[in-house]
Length: 89
Image 1 (cartoon, rainbow, N blue to C red):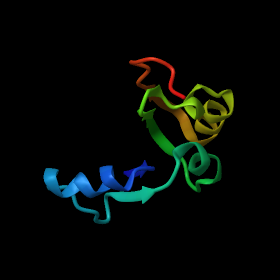
Image 2 (image 1 turned 135 degrees about the horizontal axis):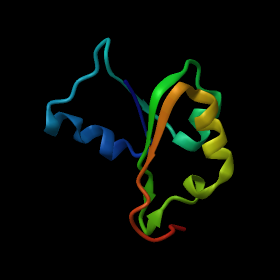
Image 3 (image 1 turned 90 degrees about the horizontal axis):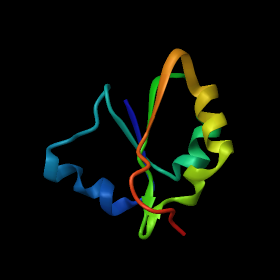
Image 4 (image 1 turned 120 degrees about the vertical axis):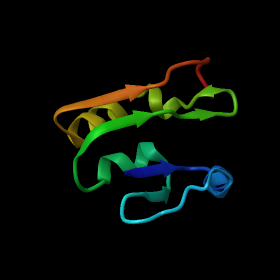
């Protein structure tokens, strides 16, 4: 599993939940909208849960992100997206 998180403070919280990186988990600090189009490898599942201080991050309302996600998915793969909340800014 690869987790992409832009906020270093969120990544730092992993210790609170006893989450540690190993051969099964990689945590990458990056903007997922920039990371995904250049990522190597394919995925069975892409989970999009991206919000800024006011709502859904604008990059996740852009068609380019979803086209990049589709290219990363293996045949039969699934994109799961959380759209709860207002559009961000």
